Amino acid sequence: MSLGEFENDWEKYVRLNNDEQFSVNKGHDYICLGDKYANNGELDSSYFVQDIWGARKVAKNAPKVHYDVGSSVAGFIAHCLSLGQKIVLIDIRKMDNKMDTKFLNKNGDFTYIQADATNLANIASNSLESLSALCSVEHFGLGRYGDEVAPNAWAEALRAFQRVLKPGGKLYISVPVGQIDKVCFNAHRVYKPQTIIDTLDKMRLLEFGYIDGFEVRYALENVESGVDSGMDSGVESVKSRNMGGGSRFCRI
Image (cartoon, rainbow, N blue to C red; front, side):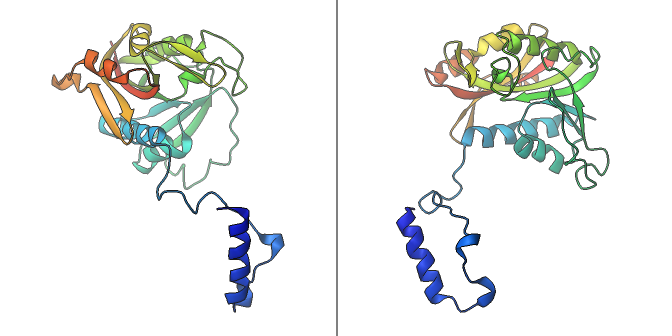
């Protein structure tokens, strides 16, 4: 919508309105120009699908407590809470207490600990049953969110994840994937899937898929059930595009 279209609508409303309770006033205007020609339900499919994928996987595993590093609070975390999952947020930054309400935390469902994800030094080894990091690791060490510039921060975080998970514990992780490793400074990194697999050398890959529009295309699925659609073919499908890739690992 152009500003001219907005003005035309404003003037038309004035002409047609006979309700003094809702008469327009320039001082109250909240101008929105980007919605008129947008498609219904327009959103970023990668994050939308990723957060549903992760919440479904955690819900199916049903851990007593799930821990998360840097995933979307409005997406993934909200989905988990709506399913009754107890969840602990881990972040290097302090969190205010705005979300510490009876509604969100009625049964201790929503708590927070401050920790550096690159070492998780205040979390004991072999102690967690379930952990996620959905589209967060690729940002570590680039300074974008106020963290220190540290080129190896992503790998240090992955090693910290597998240290704190107990044997049999599950890790849910998503990062941008492509055919080459690269850093798109200071936004994020892109990874070859094998780079993540090799770094998590104490984990067993149970599932790998990538997001294609509003679909998840699995290259490896339900290893526990013996279903494998072929990792190589799935990686080839990524081609040269940067796509969101979701993986599920088990600590061995």
